[in-house]
Amino acid sequence: MRSNTIETLLAREQDAFIAGHPKSRALAHTGDEHYLYGAPSHWMRRWAGGFPLYAERARGASLWCVDGIEYVDFCLGDTGGMCGHAAPAVTAAVAAQMDRGATLLLPTQDAAWVGAELARRFRVPYWGFTTSATDANRAAIRIARMVSGRDVVLVFNGCYHGSVEEAHVGLSGGKMVMRSGVHPNAVDHARVSRVIEFNDRAALEVALAPRDVAVVLAEPCMTNYGMIEAQPGFLDALRELTRHTGTLLLIDETHTWSAGPGGYTLRDGLDPDFFVIGKAASGGVPVGLYGLSAPVAERLWDLAPREGTRPGARSSSHMGFGGTLAGSALQVAALRAVLAEVLTEEAFTRMTAHASHMAQRSRELVAAHGLPWCIAQSGARIEVMFSPSPPRNASEVARGRDPALESLFHLHLLNQGVLVTPFHGMLLVCPATTSAQVQRYLAVFGAFCALIAGCAARR
Image (cartoon, rainbow, N blue to C red; front, side):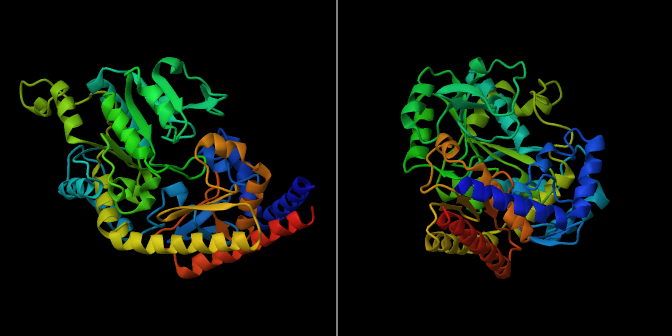
C-alpha cells in the first residue's frame, strides 16, 4: 500500500517536472544525437526526472536553469563547487593568470605560497599536482608500489576514489565482485585488489596479515553510499595495523574536506602516509593534489632522487604519473585564491554553523512527523538517510535503500527549487550560502516530511 502511494506521488512530481522544464527537456533530446549517454558526462543524466536540468548560469549558492527557474544549490557540483559558484576571488585570479599565461611547464611565484599552505593545513610536507583526485590517487598507488615492492590495494566496500581501477570492487555475499555497472577492464582484480567492510577491525586484521598490501585507500568518513562515519577507535586501529604490517595509508579527503579547514586529517590528528584532495580545491579549475609524509618521500627519493635534474644525473622526470597540465600556472593561481580568500577558517566556521542548524532542525522535523530517518553531518555537509539509525558500512546502507522514496525526495525538492546531490540525499553548504537559503531548504524538507507522514497514515 505504501509503495503504491509513493509511486503515485512520484508520478505526480514527474508530471510537474516535465511541465515546468520544457526547454531542458528539448535540449535533453538533442543531447541524445551526439553524446554517448545524452550529455557531456553520463553522470549528468542521473538526476531524478528522466532528464537533467540545463543550466544557464550560477553564482554563489544559486543556480538558474534555461527555463528561468532559480534554485538553491546544495549539490554544488557534487563538491566541485564547494567554494560557491563564480567565487569572485577565484574568478579574478583565474582571469589574471589567463592573461599572463595558463600553462607554461614552469612554476610561478604562487607555487611557493601554495606548497607552504598545503603543508600547514593538512600536516603533510611534500606535494604533487594532477588534474583530478583520481589521478592523484593513481600517483599515490604507483608510489606506494614503488617503495613497498607490493602490488595489492585494499579498499572499503562502497568507497569512491574516482575511476581508480583497483577500487572498482565491492562485496556481495562476503565475496569480492565488480562494482555495480563497472565492467572488467582486463585487470586481474583478484591479484591487485582487496575489499572489506568499513568499521570492521577484524576483517582489516585478516586483510593485512599476508603483508602483501601496498596501500590502503580510505575516506575518514565514507560518502559514496551515504555518509558512514568511522566508529570510535577505527581510524586509530587502521593507522596502527597498517604500520604494524608495513602497509602505507592513504587518506582521501576529496569529499570530506567539508569537515573543516584541514579536513578530518587536521581536525582529528590523522597521520597518513599519503593525502589526497581534488575538485573542491580550485573553485572549478580541474585539479588534484597528493601529499606524501617525510618518510615516504625519503623512500621515493632513494629510487628516484630529487637531484635527477642536475646535468649528468639520472632523470626522475616521468615515473609513470603526472601530466603536462599538472601544476599549471592556472591551477596554482586558482588554488592560492581558494586557500587564501575562499575556503578559509572563517568560512568553514560559517558553513559548519549553517549545516549544524540544518541538521538539528531536520532531525526535529523528522521526529515531529514520526519518520524512521536519521540525519548525518560532517562539518559543512549533511545527509538525509532513510534509515532509523546511522549505518556502519555500505552493506547496511544497501539493505535499507528505498529507491522510490529516494527518487521522490530528489524530485520533490527539484520541483520546489532546491538542488541536492543526485546520487543520494547529501547537501553541502558553501561560503556564499545564506540563512534565507537554509530556511528555504528547511521549509521544503518540512513539507516533504509531512507528505511522507501522510502516506504512512493512509496505510
